Image (cartoon, rainbow, N blue to C red; front, side):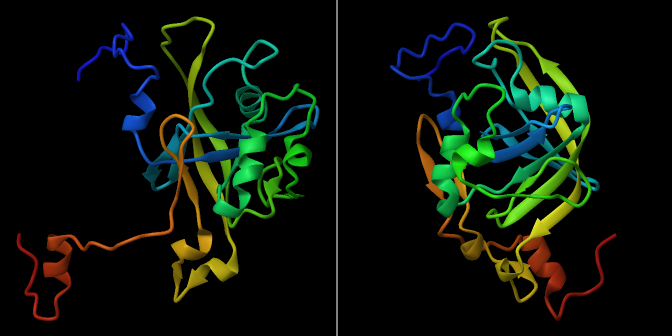
Amino acid sequence: MFYQPRHNDHGLPFNPFSACLLPRPIGWTSTISESGVVNLAPFSFFNGVGYTPPTIVLCPNGPHSEGGQKDTVVNIEATGEFVINMATWSLRDAVNTSGTSFPRAVNEFEEAGVTPVSARLVRPPMVEESPVKLECRLLKTVRLPSYDQDYPFHAIFGEVVGVHIKDDCIVDGRVDFARLDPIGRLGYMDYVRVDNTFEMILKEMDVLTRPDAGPPKT
């Protein structure tokens, strides 16, 4: 099939676009307002986009249920800080609950039943139960075009300034994916549990790291 998203002419009962981008990590984002109100929300248009410095992009798209921009956007732009907490299998219900459109004054940490813990370098609290937490500072917000003026799009770029990894998730000097047990987003209301991994070595790397490898080609 072929369709043009601008015309929404796919002829299917549900929009297939997000089902073509998978799996997607979940940016379970904690922020704090200027007045000190804490917010926690998951976003699946999220990923890493750079390594030196480590940089992520987060897209908290759409309006708040009470009007205006989402709390995540408002808080990040006001304070310049946020935390990405890894979403895992054991925390799936908490992640889902925190995605509810609560009133602005509601603390989603309390609604989701997770524990806030202080970060080292930024003001927003972290989810204690999450095995990986990324403390981030805002680099830039890009306003993206939208087909619907009432449905704003944002791409928030942040520099990761602090990384927390639970000690028991590090085995033989490497992060153990099985111990993390992360989840990701598919299309529609479907998710994936990352519980089956495999390794592939690039042929070029294999040649360069062989004991009998000669000097690199110039």
